[in-house]
Length: 273
Length: 132
Image (tube, rainbow over all chains, first blue to last red; front, side, top):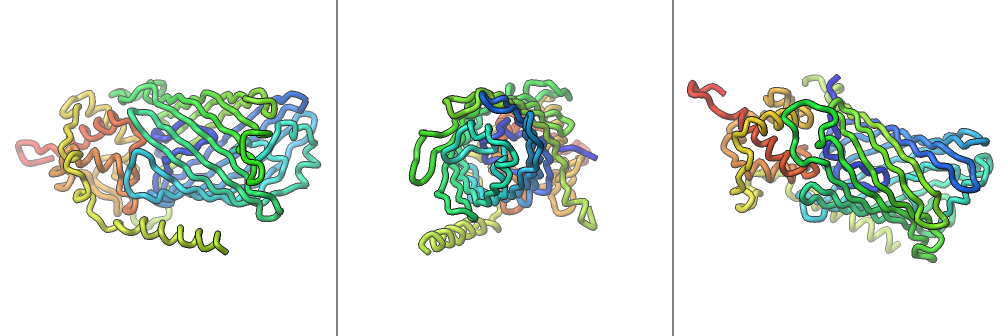
């Protein structure tokens, strides 16, 4: 099977850029997070993502997620479906993408795919058995803004979420990121560790409270460098240590992920190729 | 109620924007300043070789390994590509033609897009015998 390289995707874990999946391609990603928060048990939380390019302006994605907590248990924490739409036909200095997600996730979720509302890492002290009882079904919207200039990508996400099965206020969050490949020119030779295949950058993300309590007070905030290797065989490897910026946050969240992009899956279902 | 009306209006407006230019021919959309841009790597063998690697990685799944097209996805060995300027092709790679299936490649650094164009140009060079 031929592989496709997710060469133009920035190395972000939390922040979305305006890059969508190429139409017909399916990307399978395993994204993991590990942390040992102060006064709480260490945990490991894997997420599996299936991302499909429906058209050149629409990408759909499904997530399955779980976690294992030291001296506690392993639980499946839920699923998410998301869609990203690119409303404008051309490239501008800043490019919007609209994001809509439905999620059915228990309070035991430790994936940190985004941070919203008023939260604290001390929640992790509560046993899985208690957290897992509380399931939140919610609709999340993001405004993704992204720019590409001189090889750099700059992306900003504004996040809002509303629970549909509970009477909770709108919750808000944000994510900011910038990244660049180490080389802007491709090599004339096949190579794995060429500088053009490695992208590095940084992310900053956190909660912005709720409709009634908007701001940074009582929120988790993280920042850290991020690096990705886009191997020519279709695999992408990502790594990032994210450092907590206040007392509500964990000291460090260690993230690593691997993804594989399968090109033109839709051709498998066409009669003539 | 107001929120629902706002969401509905937004969706209708977004749909209008989405499909308004779906039938436009991309060459007519290229601004003159973009059309006149020149490939800094034109004809350079290193750039053509690098462009071939980029093509095989990013483009061949849709356009075919020999760029001859695949299904409804067009050949890049065509009169349209031959007569387009480097600037036209650079504009298309940057913006894509998203409502007709061609994704944007603005995430690729500009230098790599020029390398790709150098390779695509090399595919469309006619030999003295008239063969490509």
